Image (cartoon, rainbow, N blue to C red; front, side, top):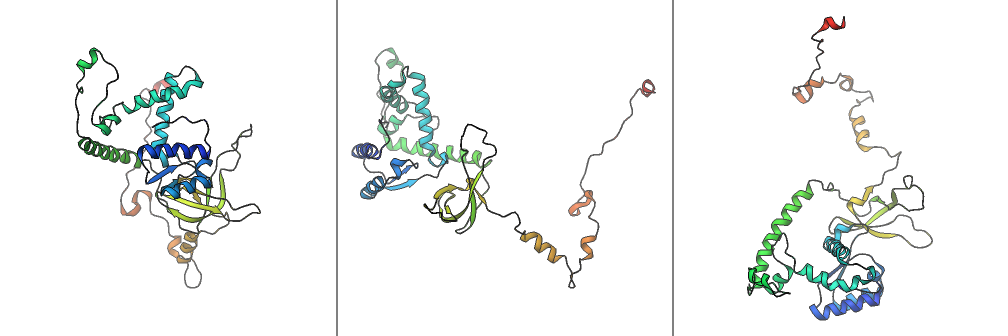
Length: 298
């Protein structure tokens, strides 16, 4: 369901959400970004009063609410293809909604309207109605839901397999750990290449589901303490330049003898490259060949 609004104020958002609740009932959870209309105290009180669990996505992480981002992309593309005047886009929104709800899904091979009501509606009468294979055909929605659920699970498994090939390594942070967070360049009309790429140091204050962490400013200033949520791919461990490496210190201590002398084993020549780890490594050798017609060059 698409609704055109004049602004994104908190009162307007609550009014539209109230209309949605009156038509379809209360949702268990509401996922939104960190817009000012969603972070306002009045909107939080509205969700608490209705018993709706409000979840805010992390900053600069569109994958956290991928369904909405995908839908927005489709709606924008369809409006650009059909609207002739920019100030008339709201009049075309019901048409776009009808087209999306009656478009066949690539995964389920069904339309959204068909999955909800069990049949495909017709909007025009003519000769094409006689050629249609779905005229006057009704299927129990429960059967369609089961088929769509199985097809969706197969599709999600395939997409997850493809996504995991390039997925970020599974880095974990604990509460109290010091990190830095990537920032968005500030456009000042000049080059942004020399601007700071990270903000910090920050400290982990809470571990949230979905590899999301709540971070806060390590040092409080006179105004207020900066706090936000960030995905693990936007964080990086904090380390000072002169901070000693524990692994290197440990290895040096193990290599010294009881009198502080270095073990002779460390001074031994390393094994040849072709005999590393007890296995013979085959390496290609370049062979210089003389020209076949050497007399031509002598």
